[in-house]
Image (cartoon, rainbow, N blue to C red; front, top):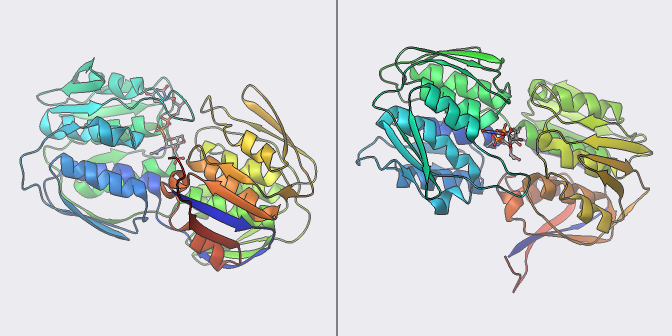
Amino acid sequence: MDAIRLRGARKLEGTIRVSGAKNAALPILCATLLSDGESLLRNVPGLQDIETTAALLGVLGRDSTVSIPEVRVHPATRPPNPEAPYDLVRKMRASVLVLGPLVARYGRAKVSLPGGCAIGARPVDQHLRGLEALGARIQVEHGFVVAEAPRLRGAEVVFDIQTVTGTENLMMAAALAKGRTTLVNCAREPEVEELGRVLNKMGARVEGAGTSTIHIQGADELEPFDHAIIADRIEAGTFMAAVGAAGGNVLLEHAPLDDLEPVVVKLRKAGLTIDREGDHVRVTRLGVLRPCDVTTAPHPGFPTDMQAQLMALLCVASGRGVVTETIFENRFMHVPELIRMGARIETRNNTAIIEGVPRLSGASVMATDLRASASLVIAGLVADGETTVRRVYHLDRGYEAIEKKLGGAGADIERIHLEGEPP
Ligand code: EPZ
């Protein structure tokens, strides 16, 4: 079992390239199911979740060639098999994103219902209710959701809660529905907007992606596409928080500054200097690291996917910071591990109060989910002595070669293999 070993504390200096966005690549890969032709995705990050999605497309009848940073999804030459198995869906919840495209394209879909995960129960009721509004007959049986509709038809769908993949699933379903669909109270994340761009390239008419109301004029048939994925704002934000915690001066190549406004506002408050340099962003922290308070919220609020990384930074800020998590009910799994490294954190329900300490101390810690593992890597960058982050398979789901990228900016970091380590 792999682990990441770090020896802090060193300032970060140099250049780090930001990869393509995981949370844009996954729905766009699923959108390839809407057309029988060959689609090409560029700037795709080399992540476990990409491999899992390619495997899922294969099971559904679409072969692909993954040669990072490109993924080529080949034309549909085999009869479709619109059934997404438990074994793949349990590995990656985002597999639920094949539901909309499958029922829209083939009139039927059987998808293993994603269970809960470390950060929360994460139901998909909004996805199912939306598809029902477009005329699908939905049944949940034996752990699967079965959706059937000879042809989906346009309708108005009002989401009870802003859901990123729920909005994306309905956008893809509506792209092949008969007539016009209006989605209300949509998620406004940049990845949703990016999917809108791709669906328009395929011939659907999507207006308002990135706003809370999206209109989609369905098409009878959609075209394949060739598209370069946007850069990953959460990966870029993670590196900004790392520079903030460790200090230093780093150029983040292709960092999507416009998509990171809510994060940048807080990091500047904490004492970082963040400036655009052409297509890149320079991040420096040379002076005192100040605390700040953060409440997570749907975009354009502070992203929940940056909460853990910011908490790691606040662990070494000079004063008290308060973090409130409003999206997921169980997203403080990193707290006990940070406390094991000497952090002073008190949690009450969905709020954590962080008293900054001068230094953390290195320790063996356990990753519990993707962003929690990133926060432990940041803590290891600033801790005295050695830190070993275990279960880095969580990290590999969302960060491409993080040890090489941070190592290239001067961190003392390596990937090691721990014999006999339980999964
Ligand atoms: C997406 O998950 C992201 N994943 C998550 O990133 C991210 O944390 C999340 O959006 C919020 O920004 C991908 O894009 C692949 P939601 P998603 O539906 O779509 C509740 C990462 O670290 N809800 O927007 O699954 C839900 O329980 C991952 O990269 C319902 O109640 O999240 C949550 O409390 C982790 N019913 C809230 O809405 C539903 O039908 C927002 O969830 C759907 C959601």
